[in-house]
Image (cartoon, one colour):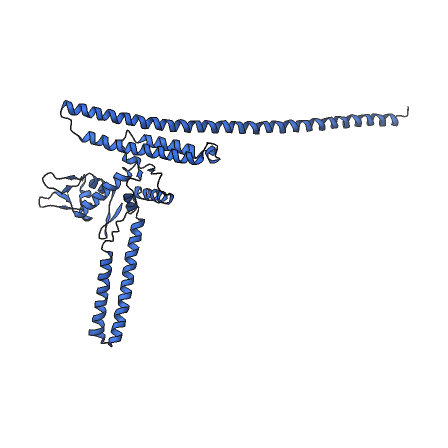
Length: 362
């Protein structure tokens, strides 16, 4: 995995370095100081070589400022797209424009693949461009006045040409960085928070339900009956099923976050344990409702599959009946041909007997 931090600092991370950064813990006695979870000396060496960690006065390995920035970016990215290996298809807000939806899906795929996410912040782009122009004009001024001793008009022309050349190159660089930032998958994903739900962000008890809902929706929308408009209203199918899938995913994400809050809340006494039990009961009821809605979608998909099989059965029966008719017609032709052949053979036999009698002298 690669990152480009603000300021253009590139960071390259191995899977072990990613794990060490993600599982870093803050030191209790030192606010804002994080200790990476390293298990091998090679990991410590790699973090130090990359500028993400350093040894403090006591020799303890702690994250540097760049390391803290990188860790923050990693945690946010994983919180949006999920843990590695749990990155199934995300559920998108059906109200998104089609182009925005396609862009977001591509960005999610690229971010999940950990393809060189970049932070191309351009808050200081114009300042740097102006600084480059000033630097170039200053050098042109030194060259014309102190070294070349050109006429005043030539001085102005050279400085203007220098300003245009350096300024144009600087502005092109700023615009290129802005375009890169707009196409950066991590930026797109981060800006789309709330517009999608990734299964990897759900807990173990919730992760299977969106997958079931997606399979049911896919089975209906990919059905030939749906494509031919035989399932009532085609547009209504798309809208309603997408809304059901989105509502279930959002509900499950909310349940996951609430369940995490319940787990983090201490329950030292009887009253807190009873309150936790009531909260869990409410969550269980909400989960049951989402499961029931998913079951309705699956039942609809099963009925669509049954209708497909029945239609295929009718089509196959008609085809086989046609084959039987064709075979029967072919048999009739064969019977007629056989009768003609029998008649020909009988006539030929009679002719042979007549010829034999004619040749007999007696």
